[in-house]
Length: 74
Image (cartoon, rainbow, N blue to C red):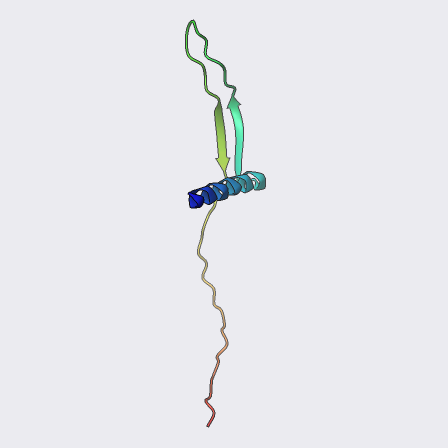
């Protein structure tokens, strides 16, 4: 039970951080309304959610590494 609660808190904190840093943008595109009794049901609000685009690529580089020689004492 404690593990589920900690996981839920972490997920909420990550979501808050993502929204505050601009990785997720939530904007309301339609208002909600109460259902009318006589004719039809109500309308749920609609949201347009835009997330950050992440691209991962590969680059080849030549890196010089030092050579280490170890000599045992005689």
